[in-house]
Image (cartoon, rainbow, N blue to C red; front, side, top):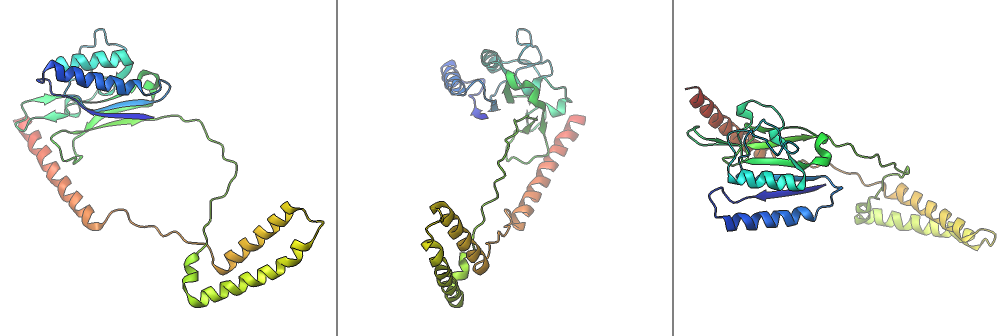
Length: 258
């Protein structure tokens, strides 16, 4: 899987800057093997609109607004690389299409996009925005649902690697106990090593089993302790930020009704 994240020049930027961006983006796309799943995602500052004439293979008619110059460039790029523009093929309410809304709620744009190469079109089940997500931006979060079927990788029945509790040796009494057990094990193996009828491979297996059982008996297996990946303080800050985001969304919704 290849994921290409981008941020395009605004629609008002001069053509030279836009051309340079498109050339760089195209060069990155060409480095991705065609057999791979490739996702293009980011802020393209491109309104694609609802008219899919000449672009039926890569977009539907569920866009928002009218196509601007960046949108035309973006549609041409996707058509050339056979990439499907996700949000335009799934029907949604207008409120779930606009990725950017001005503070006075008078301007709505669908300028953030997620695209997937046409070969994997059926893996994309939905694309829409999530207004409630706090992403510290004046843009709304765009979410795509993908369901990818992978070939099953058959395992060979290998067991998970177990690590011995070497921390036991930090204790003086524990270290002494380990030395005694190790010395006794060496003495018990002396006769085994002297046997001429036993093959070298069998001797190695017997030695390995003997030492492994001794290590497990004396040291024990190291236990893995789960550590919380996020603190309570961080969760509280996330909740506070989310509440502020909800308040902003509600105020915009009320303004739209008025």
